[in-house]
Length: 231
Image: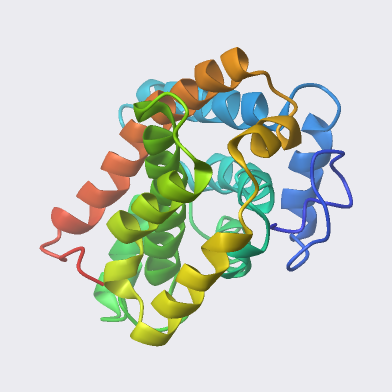
């Protein structure tokens, strides 16, 4: 999905190569755990690091952690190809920004100073898009767990409508809607993630719980600067 495929046994063909730093992080996790466990553990580590830094979120570990999420998009197949392609490009940008900026706060401060927060290609805009990607996976997992036997189609459709559809054009929404019919079944997704019905629920909840404070933190970075989230 985000180009982890060549390094990870969990994934397939890459949408776009990850930068070297991100690929190294992915490769380090390869073979050690299931992809869902790897992502959940990484977000738990990120949340602990944020707490240890007094509530400040450092850019380098944030980018590395977000890179791992690509395999989750990949497991959903062509239906989420649009998200995979955009997500990997934005993550790569933030990982590159980590060479110049220490924290997410630093990115926002600089872009506010330059009046380019919402400008195409700005680090702040890319951060906003990565946050939407994290939220999309979180919402999908929430829907997946909400009802026993819930189909992946229903879970993904609802998650997309909640998180991304408000910011997409009619043409994109229509294309995504058509793509949803290519989603794997619930059972196929569990197999792709190398989980069981029981373990997948546990690991999805871990991701939901661990990513929630990160998502909330990013939202507050914008809101605290009187920047709305309707874009």
